[in-house]
Length: 140
Length: 140
Length: 140
Image 1: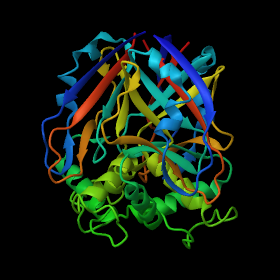
Image 2: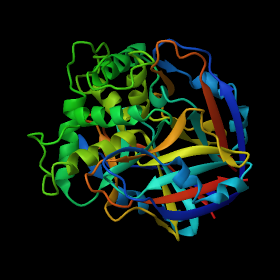
Image 3: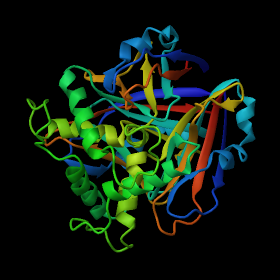
Image 4: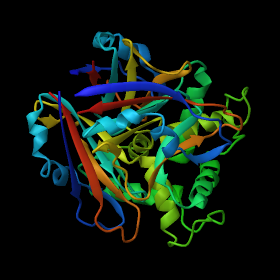
């Protein structure tokens, strides 16, 4: 087995859920070298997460944003960590609900995703800026 | 280190949380070949997830279903993605809350789960049908 | 590629979210042996989880506890699994919301975490006791 690792930056996105499958694959052609393997995608932040979900209808991503805002609202009376703005503490909680890394099988040189699966950047800050990812692929 | 990968289908389940530990192990005997390793289980769908939780009392799984239905209700006024039925958009959100892959250590040829841990299929559609999994084991 | 695996016990913690980055690193010096690799941390329990989040301000961890208690309250009328106390069934659900394993890239012998990222033990029982982790590192 062999392992490759690289670090990339995503272009900045607005608050919300965004499809980034192509932006990742295009920056890590080493995926093609593996017959069987795994890709790990790790985001080095605490207010933006990663997920795998529906890749076709943009309203799915809008509904994710609406529901996450309801499930983890801003300005709750029990929040103590408020100095970085009303979007900050909810962003930390939302990040942990989706998680900050993904494991995707590689099969015959491509990500073995289901037909409707795409990779989401879950950007929870109003101005999150460019996000850093570590990509690690291993296999044979 | 070596790596094995296979793709299996689970038998169809009703909406809810289901123990599938035995159905997975029985279809991937390669786990026994590893002294130390990892098993990744990846579900190729966006409306059913995977989790590890209590393996003994069936009411735990019923309570999961009750609480997920409360935390992510159907028919919310802000849902825009509604064409595939009232269970569809909640199923996407629930899937991302549990996640769609698991990493389990392999030790001396068996999954190194805690005494009370089992693998759950979290089926969020009313009629989800048979679900496809990619199983990847690696180690030495 | 090579793989190392060990099992450790964390010291007992009170209910809440706790930083455990140093307690893990200090018990697994094999991380230093890898130029490029991955660390998997797996918790062998169903009522305590793992997460990666903000490592600086302790009120972030307090807000996590407050919000998880609101999102998954005790004593809901639909809970059937109640024999182990009011904190038990919520602990199972909370554990699945954070997840019970982490994948962290290793780069040049250290965990490649972001500046503000730390590893959390999410202890959801009132008296959870010492928790067991399996640590698996692999790479080259």
